[in-house]
Length: 527
Ligand code: HEM
Image 1 (cartoon, rainbow, N blue to C red):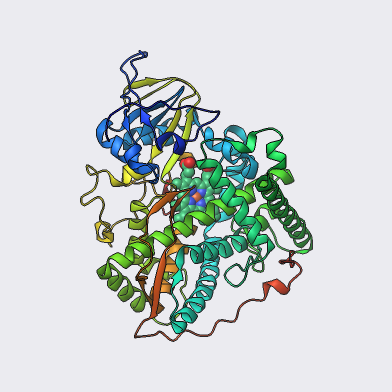
Image 2 (image 1 turned 180 degrees about the vertical axis):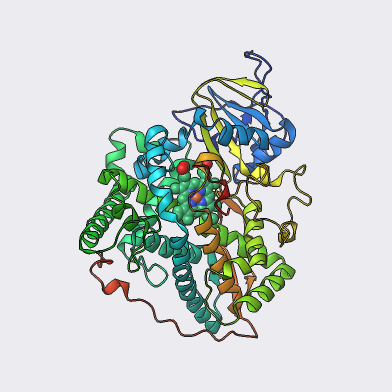
């Protein structure tokens, strides 16, 4: 970090990304009550254009596990220390809210589980967690397999035609198809074709990402927010998605009225095992707006994250042929020509370690956001109410003090006969799914989804970065994206497994499921 001073003109709310990029951190000498948190200074001009968490890593190496990042009248605390992360996320979690995150995501998630705080969060978490019971997750394995199989068919065609493929967008479609069925029994079918609702979901998602990375909140400017073509498009897309969700809720309610199933802990309707069905059958007393917020939250939470994990896993695999060979050996041995089952999840250990390690190097999201709601002490430093805090999972996961060869992709660092790594057994230096009461509710779902997709793809194909494609760089949205896609050459493996032809379930023919034809290991969950 070069030194030198810049001043930052602030106009309105400034996101962290705007904060970090292209300006300088100043050293100011204001006194506080007690020892002062180190204050970052230096010019980031030299790293402009990079993903914002990269300069935060450089600053961490200089300033340590907690420092204050100041710009204009605003400042953020950047936390990269496992003990402080544990304090905020777990030991004193009641003293922290989602802060800025809730403000940015309000237009799309409202009071859904990710942004919600306090009593609303507590009530909704209690309602939603039971829906992801073991029987449900086990039933999801065939959904993961079917969607992955469709992707394999697409790749097979590309291999025949000798065409390179852009894997990041394909993974995004794979996980959208999965999460639509899993959460509200809707078949987006985005791997097969585009339609209005898929486009609408992407418009909404891109808007959420834009808002979390934009320095100026243009969407809040009076009048402009109503007449800007972009905002109108966003509003239209949001309306289509919301109407679709309302319809799905109505259809599901009718289904439940007609069914003859007793509700119990592991309740599941075989025709529609979705989370929505569970929630409605449980008699969940919730307003339709809140339910829609929750569904939207689950859709976003479970879609972009898994797509990003798969993208970076395949990028890493393309760089380490030895890891790929070991992975393919395990998958061939365990699965042979079969479709994966829940029992295979215990046997695909190396595959799971590949995902564990991919999540270490590319955590999704790379930072967790909080705001202090009362005075507290972090790492020996007193802090006041209202501090905006960024826990850099990227820094925790790449800290040279915690990890040997921190930047190297080494699934072997997680012993095959050891426990599945999580924040508890790694003492908060590894936080792939967060920690404490707000830990991810979909950790097991997501791990199995990624294991199944990875296993099914590497069983049939070899993957190389496409020759002549732009180098793969990172950019930040809610998760880590590539700047120009992950272009790969996909070739059939010499030993092709014989996979039975999969008949697709014709969900779209059913009026109940298709409305828009127009176009730890749970150990750590501390509830
Ligand atoms: C929360 C990661 C998949 C639903 C979180 C958090 C992380 C995370 C780090 C904590 C956020 C925080 O503390 O601020 C991931 C990753 C995934 C994944 C890496 C994929 C590999 C899923 C899936 C679902 C889901 C598939 C739903 C089916 C949620 C929800 C929360 C959450 C609802 C908020 C929980 C709360 O605040 O009580 N996730 N997630 N996630 N995740 Fe996931």
